[in-house]
Length: 286
Image 1 (cartoon, rainbow, N blue to C red):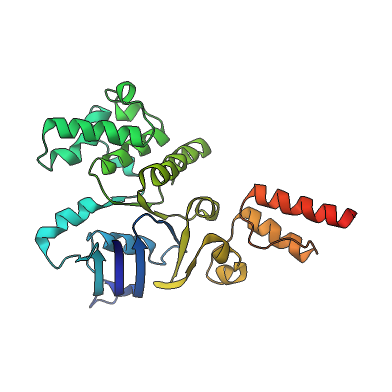
Image 2 (cartoon, rainbow, N blue to C red):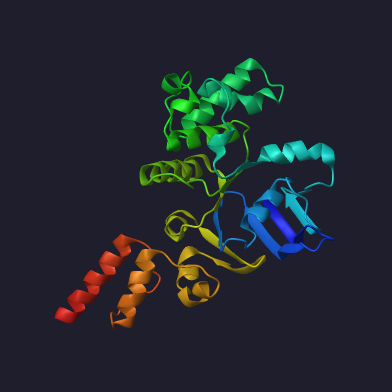
């Protein structure tokens, strides 16, 4: 079971002077249970790609499959695919509109013609999945919550649709550090405890390095490279060529290597760096 793209191309404004090739021969597979990060410079095709995953946009060429079903081939199945692949856009809290948190989260399930009992169950479950106490939050106005809390309510609204895949486009954009940590803690928890397949689009190299199991790098509409975070971020010069950086700790390690420190180059966390630097200091003092 997976999301799979096969030789997809996507063209904006075809047949006009503004024609833009946003995606060019992209082949990607997202397996069930994975936590995948998608990174790339602005205009690399990240947001376009994830909109193809649940049929919001059809590819100009090629095909997208979700669990073996070709997206868009049967219009009757498109609604089910959009339930299967939950997509959270940037600033999803702008879509909050109901007078209470519970009513907002219930909006999607209400459109599925479910029983009231099932809707209530889904709302409670979704709010608890993103770390809320259901009884304390359900009657609150979503407009009186903090930025991070609003973002979590919006994510709960997607989770209430019971997706198998959760796609997040810059989920912490515009949040302060506390809000960012709050969101990423809940996303990681969702993946680990509920086995959600998560695809995270982010500009933050640090966040991608800490959270995901596999990184897909897009550049000018093409897959430039992919692999585990250690593999990707060890190729600093290659990333810099396409306008991307590396996590700060990886940059520090790189500088230490240049200055003669005999330490591993695939370090992505402060804890790893501390351990390696201490080993090197001890070696030098022997």
